[in-house]
Image (tube, rainbow, N blue to C red; front, side):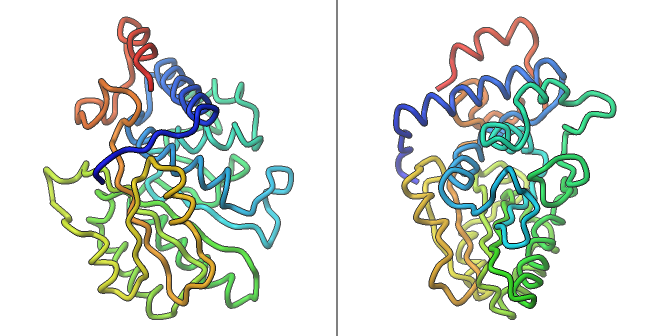
Length: 267
């Protein structure tokens, strides 16, 4: 996208605090994919703040909306947002990466409220989301299903098999968000990924993945008669200058010497 919109002051402060927590948690555990979490943090915030019909006090309600993080390695972003919305205490995140912890490097639906599917093996979460949305429709439930995939994950054939199935069955209670941060460009350039989804029969929208107003509009599912693909143009590592678009930071945590400057630099 041509420009990156800045969130309103209160929201901006909240997201900066979440970025700080994510970096501190990762540093303490010597584990985590920080740039992947930062890439999707704005998307997750808008989803849980404005879009999803789900109550942390009743997270298994049959008519709830579902969100499946198919790119499970970005789970630190999801954990932080779920904690901020009351699904579990922030203090619990101190266990991230420890042996036996509920907070693993990929999310587990058997261990935490608010996690709808155990993901991490790329190309698996999105097909589960398609099946979930189709099942809800067959059962006459009102719940909608949102899933987030990475652009690198779109190299998996299972993504396109699921996309074809969803379009064939007109699964209109399904929205797939593509975190298009171009992290896969060096390995396999995807070009216009929205055009590819459109060729499969999806309704496609393109937004700045850090613009909250645009995300709020793009995540709407009312009135469509086909599944929706929202291509969110993002910056990997967004909000931390040292990490933005830096492959070196993909899967490493800060050293004690790096940590203070990284925290000071956060947007």
